[in-house]
Length: 318
Ligand SMILES: C[S@@+](CC[C@H](N)C(=O)[O-])C[C@H]1O[C@@H](n2cnc3c(N)ncnc32)[C@H](O)[C@@H]1O
Image (cartoon, rainbow, N blue to C red; front, side, top):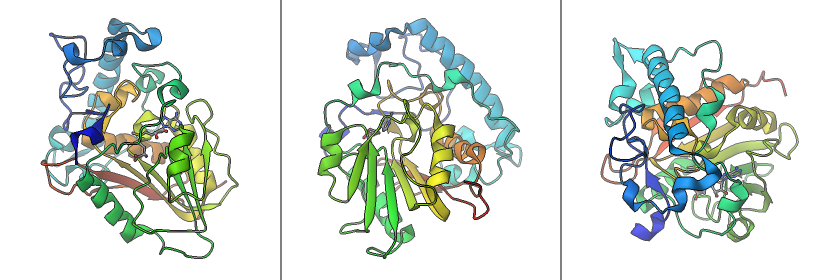
């Protein structure tokens, strides 16, 4: 759990604070990176993509005020908003249990904008042989995988690790005939020992997954769903390529490359993130109602870890 393992990643707040409020002392919204003060930000972050600070604030304000309304409408039980206190273990697990989704996908284009709108290829050009969550979170995720994955070496099983890198956090020694990685950096993917093949693909440029219908048993995505700017297109594709009953596991913590994460993610907290990912499954269609699991190993003391998962319906049209 060396500090070096978190190079470049900024912790996102746990709770949904007054996300629309811009920080009076800086132009960085308060919800983005509690550990990060403007004065300590590398200069290059301030102008990347040519976006000015005012427009960023405006986007956050619009997205967040909408989101506050939606969450208070969508995730209430006993008159209390779950999202208000995501610090308590279990809150993240609750939000998807009682959600009433609006008829239409509730997000706007600006919710998927990033501070850094320059090419993702550029950002991921240099390999990062680091881990993005601490060892406890990794261990919790691997353990979770060991409980839900098909047994190692099951004939005919195919897995896909989306937004993959040099590690997939699969259980030690885990093998299948086919484990594909899709990610941005070839050097990283080449070194990933669990993968049997890989594809370098920018899912924000091209969300079409280059696989046949009904071909995967499991799709994983670790701490990266927040970088998808066309999530519904990607989740529709996930549904198409999953076998009926196939499992999609999206996991996330509270860290991110905040300049590359979508604005609705950087302006909200952990429980909101479960709702956001749940909404992708819901509005993509063809999935069972998504569920959230809090697998955080040491409540509040080390990196939290959450999973939002769903299975492809056997009746889904592909
Ligand atoms: C924080 S890293 C996580 C890597 C890995 N899943 C892990 O757990 O260590 C983010 C990953 O998302 C991938 N990624 C980011 N933007 C992407 C995009 N537009 N298309 C495909 N993959 C992307 C990158 O390749 C990078 O490996």
